[in-house]
Amino acid sequence: MIKLGVLISGSGTNLQAIIDAIAAGDLDAEVVLVISSKPDALGLKRAHDAGIATIGLTREVYNNQTAADELIAEEMLGAGAQYIVMAGYMRMVTGPILNVFPDRVINIHPALLPSFPGAHGIADAYSSGVKVTGITVHFANAAYDEGPIIAEEALVIEEGESLQSLEERMHAVEHVLYPKTLQLIAEGRVAVDEDRRVRIS
Ligand code: GAR
Figure (cartoon, rainbow, N blue to C red):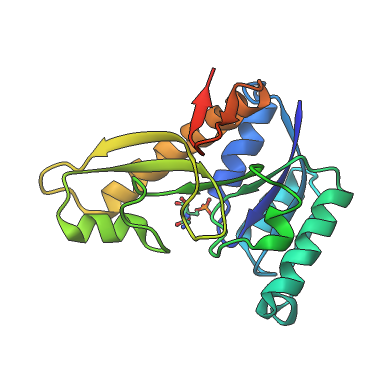
């Protein structure tokens, strides 16, 4: 059983998928704390409904990234989190978090990194005309949407498919891939080599 601290910024559907996978017995983990970069994020209600402790960062705290990341690291440690799971947390994490949780901060991104990083991975891939995109789960480092890749799943963009349809299919894949990848971590099967590549055993 691993203890997860989850960072969100918005609707929290990936958080919900994690909560549901734990309840279904598919993910051997406990979410000990959810912190949102926005105090009104819908994901906070999902956490609250699941009986999970929550913190919504005030704008004042959020605007000072060092102060925000120090507070996140302190609260996550205090709650007993062993891993930090970024689930739609829309900014990079910095030293105060990464130093306390080295190779223990995990992010999901809706594109096949290193292609289409940033806040609009699905739309950027769609409008570029690529025929294949996908989902990446990776360890976070000090650069946004970078860091050793743990898992990827590709999706073919269908001929004439709408952006909305692609978004729906991408989210459906995320909601399976993220809990599944976290379960690999819970089983102790994910290691980062000296060459900074992830080895799955
Ligand atoms: C997800 O699609 C996630 O991959 C993306 O934000 C969405 C959050 O949805 N993250 C990024 O783009 C990170 N660069 P959710 O709040 O419903 O889980």
